[in-house]
Image (cartoon, rainbow, N blue to C red):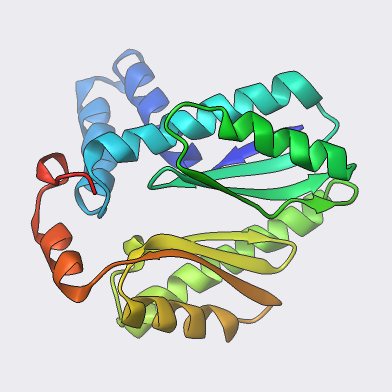
Length: 213
């Protein structure tokens, strides 16, 4: 089973940071650390929640892997402790089992189980999904309607899932952009809607100083 997490890139950066001094000196490690820190600073989640989401994805992925091995293809994405499960499993029982496993992971607030009962997707299909995700994100940037980093994009078999702490206006804009992107078959909203005042407060407050909701 291939477990794909929404924080894989951050985990890779952190791993590289640990190895960088042995590879090319302290300067590389410093640059990588700054990059990961910048992601956290610009995020609307408090720092503790940001790191909790990373831990949820790793723990959930490990537990699913222990149970199913290579029998399923499950993507685990956690945002503000709300978990999205996407991918393919071989039966309804397996789908229910995966949800139970993830629900038992510490700090999980809720689970949106979007797993499909089917054979695991092909490498070509997953590559196409990654391409769609990149196109949606690029269009977020091009439109300048909201800060693109405030919306998490996950694509599975042409279906785009959107997560984030956003205002209603931001949510509607993100959905409109995503659904008009080439290759997108369906858009699923998994946002947490906040007020414009709350959005402004979170955007102006350093990540480690934000109060949890």
